[in-house]
Image 1 (cartoon, rainbow, N blue to C red):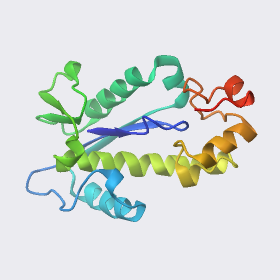
Image 2: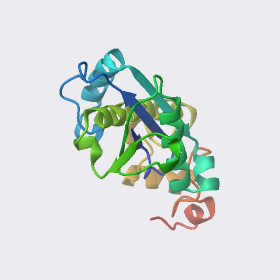
Image 3: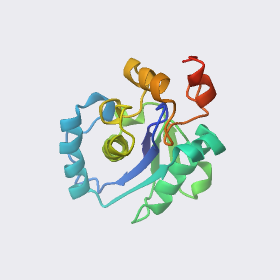
Image 4: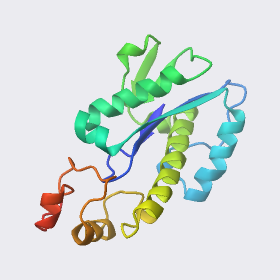
Length: 187
């Protein structure tokens, strides 16, 4: 399992879990950050076709603001693995160890470069989140969500200064809250 969107200023955090039969793991899987959008889409189709199970959990920005990023991140990872069917025999999570799932597990730094299943989860989560961000771009024009996917960049900060935060911005993140943006204080 893996998640994407932790550091984004806007949009959801998405955690995914992928279960493979060891005899049917697609080749060429790697961390989603190392792939182009086209490569991620290609691999996502192969993952969905080959996987025994795929699940994901979504955390809205308001929940991140209310509950805190790390708490919500771990909860999303738990929800994704608990929803996985069939139930996995062992859980490998990128970086985080999930003690309370009742499943044998390990949290490995850079697991998305060590495990094809974790790389697959990274790809599924990224493709899913990117699709959400394209939808949010249509709902909240002017921020450029379809291009930068809600992450910090000059274009995004300029839109925040000009428009203020949208309903899908993480107001608890430094520089994003409406009072900070209206005063011209950015990260």
